[in-house]
Length: 219
Image (cartoon, rainbow, N blue to C red; front, top):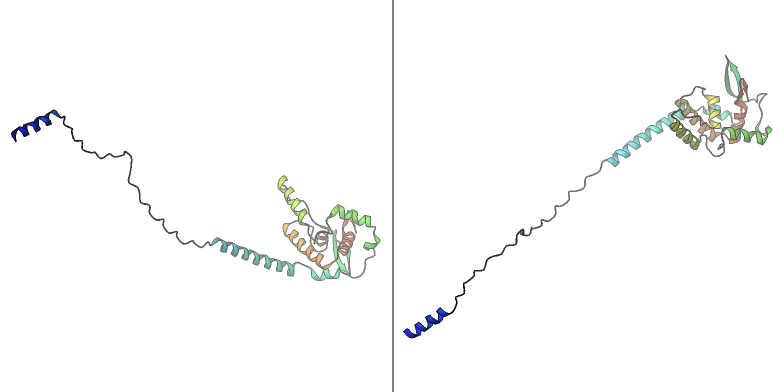
């Protein structure tokens, strides 16, 4: 036994010993534990937008104001009886204190010229000079008004006159010659009513017999 033990010891002494290497835990730098994603929050219920109601309410108020204003103009501004007389009547021109006065009459004045007594060339010349779109509008020419406003905005001046033949008849017969925006509004309202009541030929005949051709020369 002792010999055998000695032989084992000598054999183990002749073999090199291997050192035990304990495994180390390696850690990757910069690595983090994965984050747990939270479920998205539920979206809040949509708020009711109030601005459409406000806009609709504003338009309703403006429409009501415009309707009341139009009713006032229709009742208080338009001389409906005098315009109705012009269907078969005439216009008499008189002078009072250096001013011209127009008044609807039933009897034809001595100096009245019916439209059929004038040449077609003469009527066309007046239309081209004063209101080229006379037969295409209904009392007011929106295109001409727009051109006058844009020209005034470029030049920085008051808008030039964009009145139609019907508006000139309305101004001469029922309004004053003093320029104001209020007069232009009334003039436009009366012109629209005249276009609904009288024919184009009748309006043109009244115009040619009532306009001022020169100082002191009318019709």
